[in-house]
Image (cartoon, rainbow over all chains, first blue to last red; front, side, top):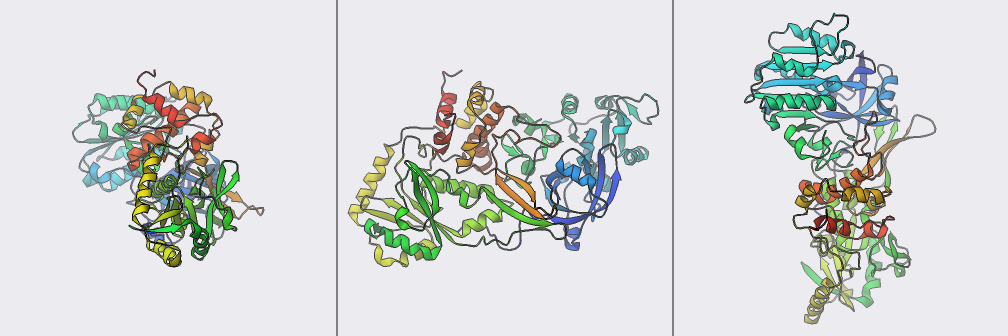
Length: 285
Length: 342
């Protein structure tokens, strides 16, 4: 048969490459940050990605799971995955000792449209584990500080013990070139050095210029509801509100069907969707 | 396109000569009115007058299950050394099923090319055959009742002969290898071909009108019809398995008894299965049967149109024939279309 795409060469889109766990940083309960390094130096040097993209992580003998990348492409050689112990693959990952080998393939997904977002204000809004993909965007923007106007981070968790990257983010409070707003719902002991209250309350402290702002949002469904309302009240265009969504991205390459939402595949059309996409896709949030 | 004539008395000789182009697979009769594509050892078993096979030819390109990798803790993941390069001749493929393969080609190509699928596609030649529709065929509605490409040869039945369209260089080789079996097409053959194809239109009993169907489906997204079908559907996934355009698969790692080495395998999956949209942590985006049924219809008739410009249905009638709950896609779409349906 003619006219079929070339299958020559060793390109197997499903081929995981071996990577070594070089560091494990405990975060909050059941959450750890894994630093991974490709064994092959060629892959290690050429592997790059966009903030918001994800990889398929293979645990030999257990299976594969999609995990968003928490590190920034501005800091190459090591890839960081912030993982919650929640399923078969992640449970197996938590049992692995340092220096173990895992499989990685990717990066997949569209990622944030960073070129388009440059020269704008950046409003990053996270709740709970939502900080995992947004941390990549945050450090990308901070490492390319001159390319962006204002950078504002709003992060909310129930209590400070549930805040991912807590010490790293607290250290940003001193930065004068960004606004770092970290809030906890409750601070019974009165020791939290930053804001107290729900994340939407942080909007009182910022001015959103709808003409020159992009918002990147990730968090639990309930947070979307209230955050989106705040953003729309401030007339932010629906296609400048970017959200990172989770589905069962099994193959990562738009073939296996599992992550379909309405007319799109989360793995190739997403996982970053605009709010405009969301209204037009049934079952989105 | 070059067209020649193969008198039916030469058919067996022609088919016999095809084995040098690959292992021959063709429809055989399993039971009364039941056919399947199977490896042919005895040419007399080939049944070119058949309505539809249980499984479409997708099984040759996306097998029901296959090994993607062998793994070990030391070497990681290595593709199997199985011979994907074996040559096959798939004989007796209907127009709708050729369209089905063309739709799968869209899915498995693009930015990410699935080599498992396309290596097999490249190594399999396709010889199509014309057919007479039965009361479950609606290929005419889906514009798949004729096919212009996607085959090497296509045989159109004109009673005592076949008109043979030669679409590829390989198809030409197949004809040239047995040149003496073929004749030139004459005026009477052309007349007979036209008469037959005109007559064929009249055999269709059911129709699924595509005109503005995506818009109608958007309007009926909240329709109670999805609840009704959800009540009937058994979530068995048979419609997906027999569908020439359903391609969803699941991937899993299977350990050997040593507890270290094993295989990463993929197997057909169905969006009607309960755990299809389940994510880690237990959240299921489509735990209701009605949501899963709706998703299947929307993906075929709405979502696929948005992604690839045509519905992922070829009107082969297999899902109508196989559904144990007697859910009929044409009936469902007709109901949705009907102005009186509330």
